Image (cartoon, rainbow, N blue to C red; front, side):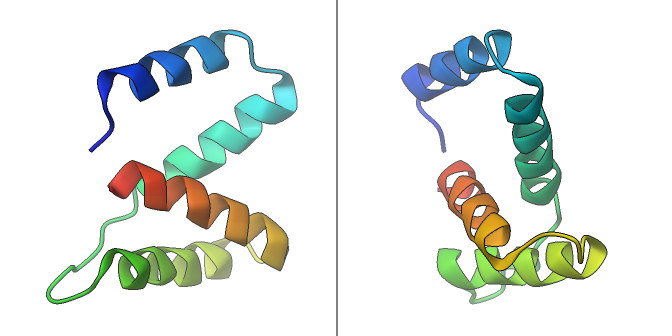
Length: 78
């Protein structure tokens, strides 16, 4: 769960975001909103599940892009 200070940073960052940063933020939001059947999955397994499905929907994304999206998703799900 994000603390108040990280939420404030996110709001401040989005207000000052360049168009590319806004696209990245929207992409991370989209990935983080994907449902996960947690069961006994760890956070890392949940993120990998999301990235596998997100990568299938967006095959144009590079491995590096998916890794960065995964970092953002992991932080949001913590």
